[in-house]
Image (cartoon, rainbow, N blue to C red; front, side):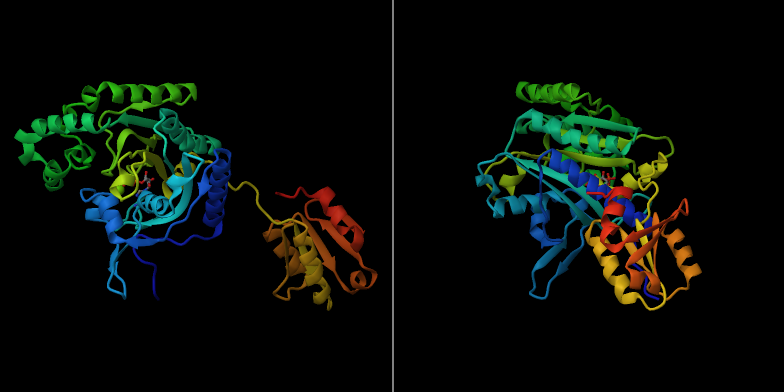
Length: 424
Ligand code: ATP
Ligand code: MG
């Protein structure tokens, strides 16, 4: 038997329902914030990610799915959402719109060749947003508020927001030099990756998972001490807006995040429930003011985040939050004798009037059909035998109370409209 590739999973049954629920909730939240939906290709020219995500990130150096297409072009399955959205922003000239900033959201599968473990897959799903064109710290706070609001709507309690500022270019340069000096005498004690990061992008050393607990990491210089006045003010303003939103946060000086392109604000949201496990970062994001220009667009500031769906589902389970509640269909229609043509017509009419309806396709007997109605958790059962067919008076049973109704076909919709609340 052929099995699914390592690190992937199928979505079905309750999992499918939960995922649809989360996607719907997120999309309705995005409507409230006035973000527009975008979708970009699952594969892009490899160069996009090498330049966009950065050549010193694990994502690009170790984790991409690369392939040569039949035309000999180097392609990569998207490992994250931002680079593709930025490409689309530039290619579709969204920077020319009158309605700046451009605020978009996406929900897509991502691909990374990682070691599969709990909370870490090779194909996984991210919801995210990107905002282009504004350097107002208010937008940073808005972007941070979205996942926080989303998790709150879902009822998650154990979440912590970590924030930090990487400052502007000038501040980062000063900080980089301080880091180079700090780590220089200890270079031999760092892991192989960090040795390379030291030369290519020393900030990323702070994001190392292997060296994280070493003393030399803990007493590394702090970004805060290298922020220039402008960067400091920017950071203070972001925090001020978070305060007005009533969002509590933890300032985490070592937070640099995995991607090369961040500036000023960076943040992560963590599920901080005991025993949750080590893959506890639910969401990450920040400001990337240089990225659009780096990908050949006009100099445009940007800020965004991405949240993982799999870890969110685990967090919800962990906090015993049931997304589905009692689910079931509105009406189960039972054809008896030879009434299938009438049954399929009535079933369709009910569906088109907004009810969730199913009927028998397995030629069950009446007992089997009532069992099926119970399995589907149907609110009402409608029986269509030859008597109903001839009289066009339908027999309906409340599947809970067993109360029986005789309703004329022409009054059917009115009857159910009164009994069943139709979801918009
Ligand atoms: P980590 O440090 O855990 O590897 P990351 O920094 O690589 O995370 P991002 O690129 O910031 O993660 O992605 C944002 C979110 O996407 C993460 O917080 C996580 O919820 C989710 N995510 C990232 N990689 C995976 C994966 N391999 N499987 C499942 N979810 C993932
Ligand atoms: Mg990672």
